[in-house]
Image 1 (cartoon, helix red, strand yellow):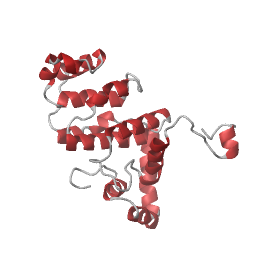
Image 2 (cartoon, rainbow, N blue to C red):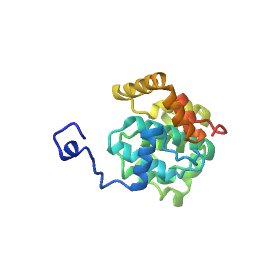
Image 3 (cartoon, helix red, strand yellow):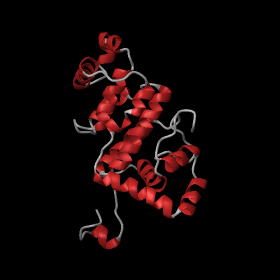
Image 4 (cartoon, rainbow, N blue to C red):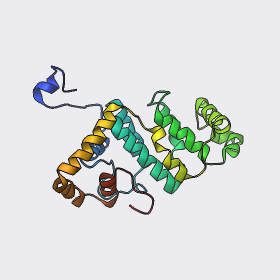
Length: 211
């Protein structure tokens, strides 16, 4: 955004008028601390829609490393509360492309619930979802089954990540920064919650019970 000879480059300020203020604050949190969790939040307490909106912002602004971190947080939350994200199917479908990793994640979460047969027989519940989503869930269930259990699901989280040279460079730079500036990292950790500390120090979301 600031690499071209635009007003933003000349003034050193980028105005994002179409972004929700609260969601953008999460983006700032992620920039500073590597997590969208606020100081007093855990993966259990953050609202699912906030995570969705953070993913959409990162998608619009082409920040795949933030998208990947949000995916990890969504899976951690699902491990604690089960599939609470399927009800956002239409919300997600209206804001993402067909190839979106977040769409694939919601499909697989529905499959992992284990009550697909009951779901397909419930016409009232099916009416809450797009037909394309139901078809995708059926195909995933019967043609390409996924491992059972949320622990196995978390181990496969990279399948829902965006992998490219940019993301790899960010992780490498982060590790190098921590090596060269350990005192600055310590100062950051002193002002953040346990969940954020663990992610910053280890590069992974906290497992349930560790937050």
